[in-house]
Image 1 (tube, rainbow, N blue to C red):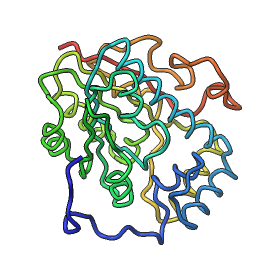
Image 2 (image 1 turned 30 degrees about the vertical axis):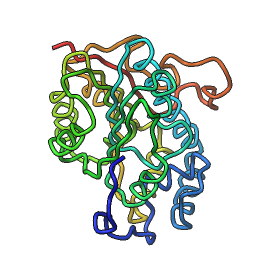
Image 3 (image 1 turned 180 degrees about the vertical axis):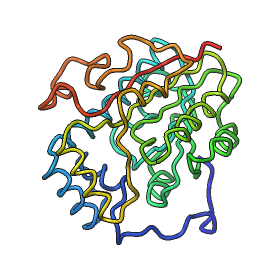
Image 4 (image 1 turned 90 degrees about the vertical axis):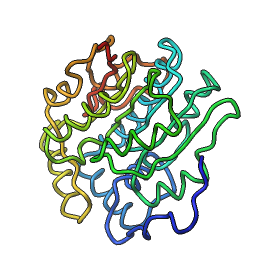
Length: 271
């Protein structure tokens, strides 16, 4: 990753309101969170206990989709938009375990994520890992910065896992996906997953989270999630509850409910 001076760092992060990356980190059992995040996370979990299964399932879906793209498809470049806080088995670790020469660019605009990424997101000698401090509302800026590390004449695996709910207008969210994929060559793939509402408890927990002052996260319909894949060739088994997307044997993909409140899939750009 390129070195940054202290002057390049974003302003100090706010610990007075919950932040989704830190709340997500808490649900995954991480330590990079603050009392305000833990309080919001526990309140959400009290109302909708299935949120912990959702967080874990999203992490495992990311791992399986990256392994699929690096392994079966042969993708050697990844653009991970909305990285979140580094945990175990980040995108570059999964991809470079399959092929050490993989090149990965992470994108986020949270100061805490940036601080951790500069230290933790290292690479194999054969490959490359970089971090882009950018807002997903500006896809062209993301592509411009990512092109310093990725060869955009060759296929790229774009991952958007649990991030598009931060974009309140659906048309804008669709535009972000289309503009990012539009800048990538044929043979590139999209790995995307996002939350849908699954009952009154889930909606109530979400509404209560918004009342904390945190940036709200929008729950979308299954039809809207499927719309993100329009114009792409969806690979089997389609756009499904993420625990059902090419599940690995073992205990990790066996949540209390077989269908968590997140749909996802992987699709190929063919033209």
